[in-house]
Amino acid sequence: MQLPIVTHPDYSFPFPSGHRFPMAKFGLLAAHLRDIGLLTADNLFRPGRCREQWLTAAHCPDYLARFQANQQSPKEQKQMNLPWSEGLRKRTLLAPAGTVLTAQLALHYGIACHQAGGTHHAHYDHASGFCILNDLAITARVLLRQTGIQRVLIFDCDVHQGDGTAVMLADEPRAFTCSLHCENNFPFSKARSDLDVPLPQGMEDQAYVAQVMATLDLLLDQVAPDIVLYDAGVDVYAGDPLGRLSISEAGIRERDTRVLQRLLERGIPVATVIGGGYDDDREALARRHSIVTQVAQELVQHR
Image (cartoon, rainbow, N blue to C red; front, side, top):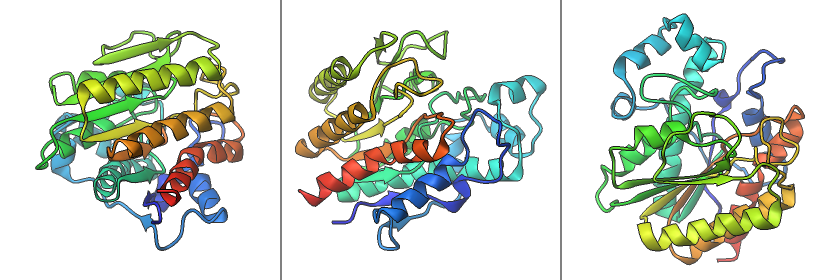
């Protein structure tokens, strides 16, 4: 089986080079996956624009309209912290549909990987932390309207707490939000996920992977999810300027391998999103984000 991979050329677009958010990484990531033979015409899936009913089931309609028309208040623009453009509008409306598509492919094939997503700081009616729309919350609500989906687990291993996801799904008991994050990092006012696992600054590979797996095993038994949305953020990397943990690339690979292996062993569909990563070396960052997809393909080949 070839691993289903979801991406779109409009995920990257012309963007100020000095901005902290690495908008170029999405295009570089897709290019790297092509270069190493993982992304081909046979396993490429492209999303269309996110359906309006999916968006309004999770986000405030007025907020959606203001963003699309570039009519946000100065406060909202500051919260977004991304310069508005037609490219940003188009990308923002594509990416959540990409996560929905990845989840649908995971239900069919057992596993699928989105080369974007994990915008977990976006709230119902405002942006935050470079996140405008919350693809994880949107996807969870879409999934829970489907026959046969009773429980969705969002397993968020980005270095920052998934505060927007926690708040947006607090009223949905069938969606379980779990965030493993550096305790001393953004957002500095934390939300309450169904399970929060704060990690000490400077945590290293062995203790980190052990905590990730202990948490996952606990949740698989307690939650019994029908599908897992796995945020494989690489901002846990020791050299990430916004991270504050001390995880090596080998540690990231071990984390992703053990998480995906466990889910495949248990027969639980898993959709991956790339989450955060902010290295100034954009090529190195793209290669780091490719780890979860490389691991997924290796596991699929050995099934």
